[in-house]
Amino acid sequence: MNLIQETKFIMDKYGIKANKNLGQNFLINEEIVNGIVEKATISKNDLVIEIGPGLGTLTSRLLERAGKVIAVELDKNVLTILNDRFKLYQNFELIHQDILKTDLKELIQSNFNHEITSCKVVANLPYYITTPIIMKLLEEKLDLKSITVMVQKEVAQRLTAVPGKDKEAGAISYSIYYYSDAEIVLSVPKTCFIPSPDVDSSVINLMLLKQPRVQIENEAFFFRIIRSAFSQKRKTLINSLVNTKIISSKQEAESILSNIGLDPRIRPEELSLQDFVSLYTKIKK
Ligand code: SAM
Image 1 (cartoon, rainbow, N blue to C red):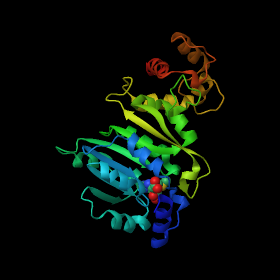
Image 2: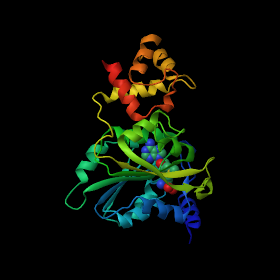
Image 3: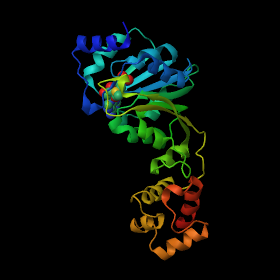
């Protein structure tokens, strides 16, 4: 039985219909499933957290490689499938919960031991919450080695864009770049899923840095500046910072920019991460 037949068989047997509201697009391409596991470079020393196991397609491959797999799934309708498929695996744990409400720090810490020494996140993400999931994984400062996840193609380009260099960069690219080395590792056509989504997808791999790329005392304020800079489309940096009250006047903004050697007409996407550090340092004073 190939993966398409297997997926349809499981859906029929358990009377499952893909739930659009939960972002359910099930993977049916063997090569892609194996490719994700390959790119995540999983070993028996790894705890893998899988977000949204669905019918268990990716889970079954992860279980062969990892020391332990903890699958966090919100949809109660697929729990029986997952339990039936994997109850004989000693290294499988299923948590019925919203990933955004899961205490991942505690989960990771309580599963580390002399054999399981690192943690990786692997998932075909529910697209409606891609950004909050990735921000949670990064901002909670978890003991994570890498994040290997399927996202929409356009989102993948933005998430992996190098700020100040790639035109796709947006506010979120600075966060990703602050915490990790990010790259697109697989291109995935929409025909690799049932139901087929509207757009193509990509798998991205984020290798978490041991320390953030730059030293920032007040991260919340630093990222507020970046979000404000990008909050108004096609505006110059100065206009956005003044309109969002990060800087009180145009004159002050011009003086700060000239002080750090930036053109007053510069647009936010032209700033590197280091440029934002210089800006933050001046505004903070
Ligand atoms: N891993 C499966 C695959 O690749 O075929 C399914 C992936 S599907 C794109 C996304 C999965 O995330 C679904 O199983 C869905 O029920 C689950 N999900 C949606 N929202 C969730 C949430 N807040 N927390 C945990 N899982 C969620």
